[in-house]
Length: 205
Image 1: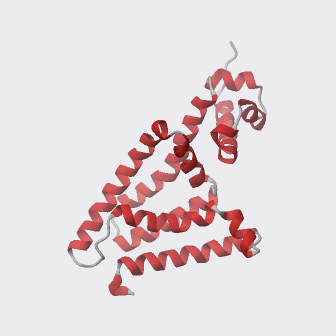
Image 2: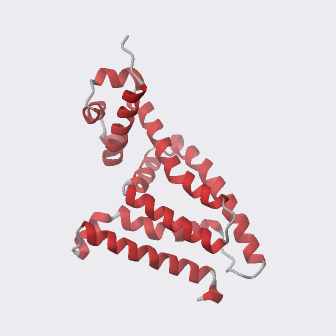
Image 3: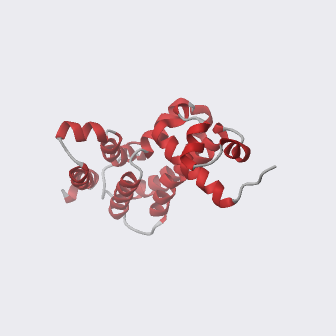
């Protein structure tokens, strides 16, 4: 039976990532992936066996891309304010790099919650635990508002991610081209930083 080398494997995975981000699991066919990779469909099926198996690999890779950088920031020995700003900046960088990433993750978890949510829960537990400890410590010293991590993370991430998830709508509504949209998102990111930090650290507002 024909063998596939590691470079061909990566080529298929990169092609599949691009197609899945654009069309989602339900809208993607094995033919779409083979065509995007410029390979014979039999070869892609030989290695990955099924579209579902390939999708799970891609989903795990994209989820890791999204989560591990934030976990790295949470591990750094820096103050809470600096940590929050770093998380917002990193989320902004990821959204610019892969604008469809969050919409893809949320759509696919909604589609198959039972299979995909445990993978996301593993990262969520680690992220919330690390941040919750620092929030409780700061709140005990009276330096921040008492705010649970379950409310802080949506404030930090949702305010920024919505702009990218609804990119086409914002560009149409405000008459923006690509360069203007990038300028718009940069300003919005800075507003999010100001809003979140001024709310959490009321004495500094």
